[in-house]
Image (tube, rainbow, N blue to C red; front, side, top):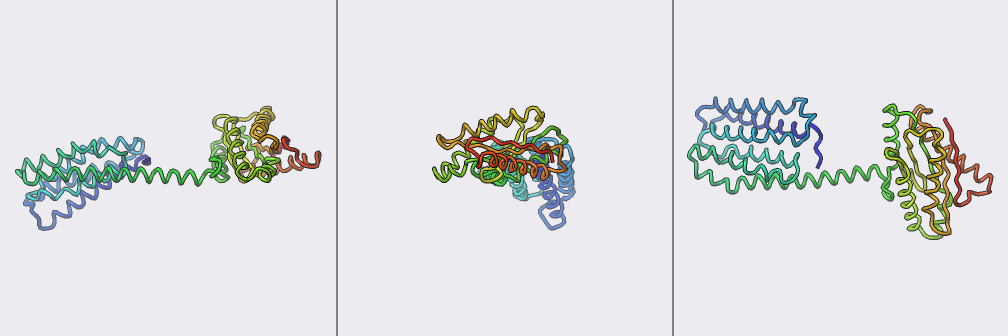
Length: 335
């Protein structure tokens, strides 16, 4: 489970503000409280502490840092219980709210570790006010708080993992696990927006892939795509991007590629494709290149690389009648 910076603080702040407002409102109705002034004072204090959780500083701290406020929250609840009159049960719901918050924003076993502190905050006010008949309810009340927190934490973690998997599936090719076209375009746009220079976009299309599917079946074709994907990923540098754009087409973003490095990079990529080819059915590659700096936007660079790739493929076919298996055709356009 991952909590965004500041979300846990705002969550605890909301719990505190709602609790403070509820207590203040309750003092205007008939109750067992003879003197409402102490109750209102503690409620206002709780509201002030809760409002502090919205300060910008919490956005720079991890969610774990907010656990430092749990003793303060439980202490305020205990003080409420101490000044709340003869009704020893009126603040149990506030303990529950704190543990719900812990379950939502913190990992499993956090509620269990807070349990002893909650036990003290729950029982001490009751014992001080001579309510031993109510203090024994801690035997089941505090475990219930802990169990609620742990169940919510488990469910939050499962939901977080499911959401992370959905995000991954929404941005990756289901067969190869590479970036898909949309994610690749978005990633290239980030590089361009950051002002990075020297990036090279490569558009790769396999030559001779269809015979693999026709001769060995689609399972063999999928296996070949997986092998080629693995070779491409292992061959590029850290920080470069590899994507499957569809079918037997791949896209690469080569960051900081100097002009004299292009041939070397493409030689390695072509060799990687050839090495992944099945015996007797060699597969080649046609490649189109485009300098990201030479284009007004990412789509234009991708179109140029795509057009360069098809120009390379047509050039090879014109020379040989058809793209021979194991061929390497490269066209470099600037826009």
